[in-house]
Image (cartoon, protein in one colour):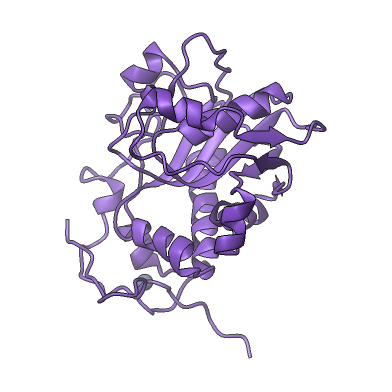
Amino acid sequence: MLLPPVCLLCGDSGYGPDICLGCRRDLPSNLHACVRCALPVVVGVAECPTCQALPPCWGGAFSAFRYEFPVDSMIRSLKFDGRLVFGRLLGQLLALELRRRLFARGAARPQLIVPVPLHPARLRERGFNQAAEIARYAGALLATEVREDLVARNKDTPPQVDLDAAARRRNLRNAFTVDPGLQHRHVAIVDDVLTTGATATALTETLVDAGAACVEVWTVARTLGRDPGSVRTPGRASFEYRLTNAGRVGPVVTCANPAGCDQAAAARPRRLFISNGPTKAVPSR
Ligand SMILES: [Zn+2]
Ligand SMILES: [Zn+2]
């Protein structure tokens, strides 16, 4: 018997992806964001001042959500509790947001999706690569090829959190090797979270050295505390941002609701079923 989809967050009936419309509307959308680094910007601005002064080496970055509850819990459930069903949900949500906010506006689609690889030792330990799980479902919805095997991670880099920018760069130098037969010019890197951008920078440089002409960075979530400017490399070629309608001028998005789209949904408390600890209520906005 085929069961109807059930919302992974509240248990109501889903509408296709494993989430109900109410819970989806309550997710912390990263709607007004810099097209280069995905940090929030004021409405109508395409690029943040940091990116205008020194763009990152990749062409554009897209993060569907801010790294806030419940998206942060969904990602941790996937990564640390091995709840792969969240890989499916997050991958589908990433694809739906990309479709709605970029491709429906005429943005060029990449030819290939490359999930950020894990080092083999970490992969053995975890049993799966969360980025690959997300990429697989996003790629299926977007009808775009996903290559998990294209890039290898040679260095088991320690967590980057406590390192300064120079140490982060050193840490990730030559971290990746790519299959030399890269045929695709326009590639999207997929990861769960974009934080400092150090990993995405190293992977972009590897892909560009292998022949990619345009690299984008797609993540489910964006942390807001850290500026990827700390890992930008002056002098490194930055590539033309080819999302045709993402726009360097004029509003990137328009929202008819004066309160903002993500606050349009009624802030009703919800019980969420996604952590091992006590269930939490969504903070009302
Ligand atoms: Zn729900
Ligand atoms: Zn920026």
